[in-house]
Structure formats: C-alpha cells, structure tokens
Length: 235
Ligand SMILES: [Zn+2]
Figure (cartoon, rainbow, N blue to C red):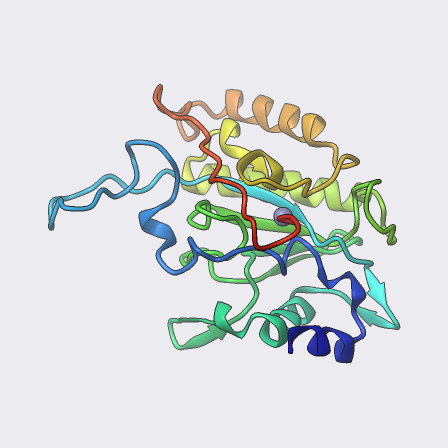
C-alpha cells in the first residue's frame, strides 16, 4: 500500500509536487513535449524532424530542507520516488533513475544533478521533455508550512545561473522558463516563489545573448493538459 510506504518513511509531506505528478508523458515525453508544431508528429516515418522545443519547468519540493535530521536532497528524492513510484524508473545509459527532476537546488544554493540532461523527465505532464528544476522548500502559503518557506537568496542565485547555463547551451528562450503551475493544473512552486523577478533577470540575459537565445517560434503556445480527476491536485 502506498500509504503504508509513506508512513514507514515518516515523510508526511510526500503529497508533494514530486509525488503526485502523473507520468503519462514520462513514457514517451519526447514525442509529446508541447503543443506546438515542433513536436514529433506521428506518421511521418523516418523523415528528419526538428528537435522538440525544450524549455524549463520550475518546481518546489513542498518539503522541509531537513526532515528529522535527514537532508532532503536529490539522493533522498530519488529514494522517495523509488519507494512511492517505482514505475517512474528510468534506465538510461546503464543507470537507474527514479527522481523525476533533472536538477535539485538545496537551500544553501547547492545544485545537484537528478536525471541526465539527455533523459526525459518525470515532473510535469506533457512537459517531461523539458528540464525540471526543483527547489527544496515549501513556498505556498496555502499548504503545510516547512522551512524554508521562501526560496533562499542562495537558491535564487543558483536557479538563475542554472537557467542561464541551460538557456545558452540549449537555446532556450526566457519565455519557455515556466512554473509548474503554468503548464499543469497545480499551485507549484507556490505563491511565494519570486517568478517575476527571476524571469526579469533571464529576459535581460537573453537580450544580451540574442544569437544563442532566439525568441520562441510565432506559433508557440502553452497548452495545459486537462486536469486529472484521480488525484487531489498536481503538486
Ligand atoms: Zn511541481
């Protein structure tokens, strides 16, 4: 029973972004990346296709930074996902991954790797072809409060630097750096997440690097999948 597993782990915050996330897109995320004409289309055989449009989805863990003396980090999230969602297993280049995110940022600003950048994520329905970055913390005032309840200065700094790096290397427009709640039916990463300030920095950065970071195609639009009915919400 999943509830028993949760109890055994003594992690009551597990009803978090990471764990209620459906993984429908996880199985074949690269073919259902986003609702634009740039995704792979069925029935086109071996015709060369443009690479799927790739963006970044920002999350919080809706958890404390430390729980009963144990630091919540990428390794711990991987353990939790293995216990609660064994079906999220991804075997990639000889390694096993349960964590759904590509990166985790700890309250002290440390950036940890989750899944390899080349692998699909399991963090946002139909947007699992995008990078998933999770900040450890609980940034929504409507949910159970944990520390940190706001992103730390160090976390914000690291997040901006990580986004800049990914934007440069993968030519990601700032317009494609979205909150989880922008692409799925969820409040993640919470109403205390300073999205506008972060995007302001990324917009300025993109303008200074126009050659590497072009604007999104004209037909780009965010399409949210229909809300789920078998979970309370998508956190
Ligand atoms: Zn999320």
